[in-house]
Each structure stands twice: as C-alpha cells, then as structure tokens.
Image 1 (cartoon, helix red, strand yellow):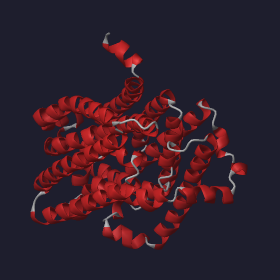
Image 2: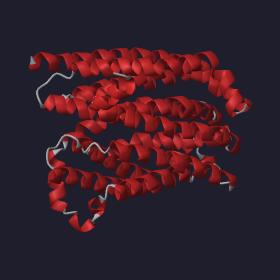
Image 3: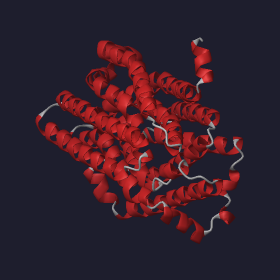
Image 4: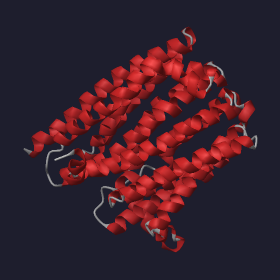
Amino acid sequence: MNVVQRIHSNRFLKNFAALFSATLFAQLINIAASPVLTRIYSPEEFGYFSFYLSVCALLIVYTTGRYEFAINTVKTEAESQQLFKVVTVFSTLFAVLLLAAEQLFYEPIIRLFKLEGASSLLLYIPLTLLVMGISQGLNYYLNKYKAFGVLSKGKVLRSSVTSGASIAFGFTGLQSAGLILANVLGYAVSNVYQTRVKKIGFLFNLREYKARSLARTAARHKHYPLYNSTSAFFDNMAVQAPVFILMRFFSEAVVGFYSLTIRVAAMPISLISASVAQVFLSEIAELHAEGRSFLPVVKKVLILLAGIGILPVVLLVIAGPWGVALVFGEKWRMAGELSQILAFGYYAKFVVSPLSVVFFVKQKVKLLSMIQGIRAISTLSVLWISSVYFNIKGVVFVYSIHELLFYSLYLFSIFHISRDNDHTRS
C-alpha cells in the first residue's frame, strides 16, 4: 500500500492531510508576501503590529468564554447551535465592553507600552476580537461535523486576503494600520465564506437568540470560562510575554525583528499545530467516548510531528541570518540571528502543543490551568529579569532554554494522563 492509499484509508491521516496541506499553503502565501511587506513596512511598524496581535491573542480567550471547545463535546445538534450562539454573544459583549474600557484607561495604556507612535491601534482591537471570536466558533462547529474541506479553504482564503490587503494598504501609506485592517478583513471574508458554503447563516438569525435559553446553556458549561479561559490566558500570556516585555525594555524595532521570526517561523508552527490539534481532538474524543484507549494515537501524532519539524529547525539554525537578510532585506538580519536561538523552543512547541487537548478530553482543566499558570509566571519572571541584565540575544537565549524545559515537563504530564486513560479502560 503506497502513501496516498494509506492516507485515504486512514481517517485520521486523511483529515490531518486536508488541514495540514491547506494550512501549509496558507503559510506559504504569508511567507511569499513577507519579502514585499518588509520592504513596505519598517521594523518599527511591524513592532506595533506585533503588539496588537499579542493583545488580541491574549484577550481572545475571554472574548469567547472558551465555549467553542464545548461544541465538540455535546451530543445534540441543538446544543451545538446554542453553544455557537453563546460564543457569538460573548464575543459581541466583550468587544463592546473592551472599547469602553479603552476609552477610560486610554492615557495610562499609551504611556505603559510607549504607544505614542501608534495610539490608534487600540481602537482596532475590539473589532478584531469580534471577528476572531466568530471565527473560533465556526471552526469548532465545522470541526464537529468534520467539514475539514471548508475549514481548509477558509484558512487559505483568509491568508490570501490578509496578505494581498496588507500589500495594497501598505502602498497607500497607512503604516501599521494597514497590517491591522488587512488582518481584520481576512477574518471577516473567511467567516462569510464558511457560513455561505455550509449554508449555516441561520446561526446568526437574531430572532433565534433567546436570552434565557442561552443563559442556561452557558451555565451548564460554565467551567469553560471559569477554568478553561484562565488556563488559556496563562498559556497565551506565556507565549505573548516576549512581545510585552521587549516593548517595555527595548525599542519598537527590536519587537519588529522578533515579530518577523514569529511571522516566518513561529506562526506557521502554531497554525500547523492548531490544525493537528483540531483533528487530534476529534479523534481522541471519539475514542474516549467509546471507552477505548487513545494512548496509541498520542504516540502516533508525537512521532509524526517530531519528524515534520526537524527540517525547518535545521534550516533556521544553519542559515537563519543569511536567509533572512537575503529574502527580507539586510536591515532584517537581526531577525535571522534571533530565529537561530529560538528554533529549538519553536520545535518543542510544535511537537508537544497539539497534544494538550488530552487535558480537555480527560476533563483535567483545573490541572492544565495550574500548569499554565506556573508557566506564565515563570516566563514573565525569566524575561523580566534577563531583560534587566542582558542584551536582546541574551534574553532570547534564556527564554529558549526555559521553553525547552517547560515543554519537556508538559509532555511528561500529557503521557501520564494518557496512560491513566489506558489503565482505567483496560
């Protein structure tokens, strides 16, 4: 049996291949656009854009209340629809409240993060969170019904629109606002596409949004905003901490260099991992519901990801500075030097992060929250202290060591939980 036949005969591999190939293509679009964008936008403008993305990534966990994760676990279509509506309502209310809070604390926020050069970006954050929240809900709703083809095409469309609009807006002189508006447009177009293709526009029929019914649904799954959101916040804080700390202790240009490593290395890794996690969640949730062990699937995915991630890491370590300077321009060489140091931490995250959905299937949300809380505190501490005493390369080196240690312990916890499942079902 050849490779193509094996993929088509194995449901997990087939679904993974669909999302992985689309995500990879979407990232190739982003990477292909990057050499143009780095010649239109300055490192400082990329630095402000990176700060905006980090704020959105941090707040999205409270925007939806994490109710999208429950969509995949309920048994009835009616409950799935109710949960999607809860996500939509939460996203809308959060965006409105955040906009009001920004107006109240505008000046302190500007001073704290030195945003005098791009203060208008705060106004775009609530709108971004709204379209991101709806996107999260759609992704998990479509995932429940294994609509991986639509999910895949939505990823490619979003990437294409975002990259194309970023270039177009850049030529109009919008500066960092051009990158931000393009990001919002990409999410919005993808959301509309997925809704129309799957003919699920009824999910947005406001006449069907019954306050009491939605409140009861939200209450039944309240552990998601109470525990899962906190867990995810700590996890995202650990991931986004470098941007916040670098913005505080170094220049916008340094944040811009770091953001390019995220764009060409970390972001593709994260999105590919997210694609794997969606398929992995669907697979092990089904096995667990049937009373079967999912430990073999955990091992299979671990080996698969470990193999996929080796080549990019080797390339970053060997040719990082030279490659970045050649492709993106000599002024971006520092980004390549940082990517050399960050490569090993990126690899650990790529291999281990998708497996963390085991905590949700086993309903170990409190344990996950504790682990990620410890990680957030340790990451912030390591970055803050190292930023006081070291230059940017020293800070990044210390951070990479911290990441390797954390993901090693994280993997140990995942296997322990998976083995517990194996024992209890034997």
